[in-house]
Length: 481
Ligand code: BES
Ligand code: ZN
Ligand code: ZN
Image (cartoon, rainbow, N blue to C red):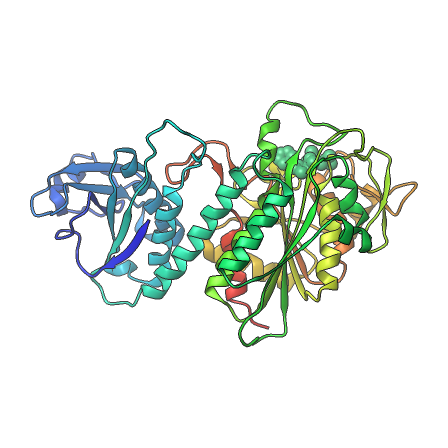
């Protein structure tokens, strides 16, 4: 999608459609719409759509009025949705060129960036494998902004971020037969070549040398070899001594292993690499934006399968740190592969860590599909991530992490068990990870409820969401010691 800024009002622009936000309680007489307000046909409610044709004085054949809600509630997150909903509505009727009005009040980088993100994210369809559909997409999106502010940098940044987010969504949507751990490693290598990053892929032999017993135990049931992907970004001149580590769960398919999952809905478990994909996408954007802090992504990638060589409940494995784990349930595999990746990230010099993982069904019970569950061993680190999340419109909710929960996953035969029983499942999983993050300031993001949209929204297609890419990129950009 081509993105541009037009320094003019909507009327003279020639596009397939021009889009004007209209607000609740603000009668807008333009485009002959005053009567529609008076008749109550337009109220300006969020995402309400009114399509007008051949409006006198407007060069484009269509004007789409989109409800923006109450002006005092309108923020960049609402703008993102509005632009996405407008794009989705218009492309569904075959419109290819769109211009959206950015009124004088909203002529700032925050709103312009959010509108561009919304448009690019709204245009995405997970239709790669549809052969007969007439696939609809928008060719160009312009921001019409007659007011003065310099928006170029914000728009370019937004394009980079949203395209990276769509890249994450397309990776997550790849089925497990078409995206194995080795294929994810190939994707990381091409990213590195294209965006000036350094890529290293640790294979099974190297992981054996490093004694990554927890990760290797999960991988042993699959015919697909595991990889630990390392992607490095180094700033031209590091303004900071910090080194941010991004660790993402990369289970290309989670059958549950010997503790096999019920078949109903199992197809969705191709998304169990959404945390890893978000880290790849974040590095893609970071490679282009080039912030001042060093960032390294670590993506442990495996397929969790049952089979003659699979690990069994009761097996005891030793993680790279030396701690031993009794594998009570082979379906609690994410924490096992992350344990070794966290230890490795610390050994590689990371001073701060963020991990993202589709880790537990329990976080979906706790927070539904609206908020990422956020766990932290350090208040300052928690606040940094929460701040970045808020600024980018990704919702996250802080969850407790207290030593007492360790009781839940004690083992009679090893240092710990890999599950903590029925209650507080998202918390015990996070507590388990903390055993491996140790004292390094660390945030864990459980994205099991938010990485996949079960039903399309007016502004977003069904399927992968690409969360928490925007937060991660913002965190790196805004890093200050
Ligand atoms: N990938 C799943 C988490 C998951 C489960 C995401 C359901 C979305 C829906 C994870 O590996 C897993 O299976 N977790 C188990 C842990 C349990 C065995 C302690 C879970 O949440 O059921
Ligand atoms: Zn599992
Ligand atoms: Zn899993």
